[in-house]
Image (cartoon, rainbow, N blue to C red; front, side, top):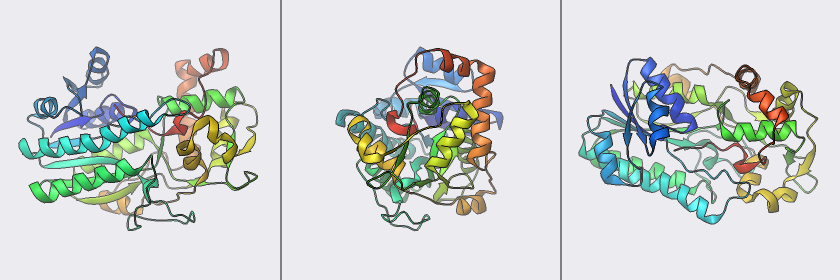
Length: 337
């Protein structure tokens, strides 16, 4: 098939271009500069210039494609994101979805897939939830829900197939946020954030290695199934367990624990809420629909891959010997374009 990917130069998009081309598909990746062209081309894709916020450029870039994928975000990477940064992310998600719906209708695409996030439907009491749970968005997740609704409505109006993949908390060797976390642990500056007045309540998170996310989108690309699915690994994990396991693999100091409210002035409400509010969910429905299973079924296998990759590439030595970036920036939320 001919597949168009918005967000092709992001942490998911890069892996997605590789996965789809390895499966024999022709992939067009949206780029905005020469470096983006290189990132797409070296993974076997065809770079085409444009911007997800520019409908005309999307129409030209997406011409001839059967499947469109909206994997673009502008998640802030600063330590304490500003409102302006969140507004840009809102635009990329929702306005980008509106533009891609229009393009899908104009070029007669068969299918439109959208990358969303599981924790927009987390329960106020931290209980497990599935795809049938009502949305419970906050400031940082509301635009993902808006984009979901735009894409669904577009499919109903124009007759193309729609698939919404709500992914767990991304991590990967080439994720800037995963590197920030690793550097912070090595420096002893990435704490375990806990809920409650004393920070003793651990949040349980559903996470996902980016390679498995790319494999999930490739499976959905090759299918005609429509709907909404949660895509995570097989084992929700407490933040404290995840952080300590990461520190252990890095031979980093034991991370200290602090109350989330104490970190809020430094990193912002969105980061603290993400890491102190439980959002356990399951990939069961996606597995059944697409006969998919994660290559990294838990944080154990995934962190082993991250650290081994860093060691082989020399990244670990750089982290240990160089100046570390600020930890907790956006707290591991995935990056897009």
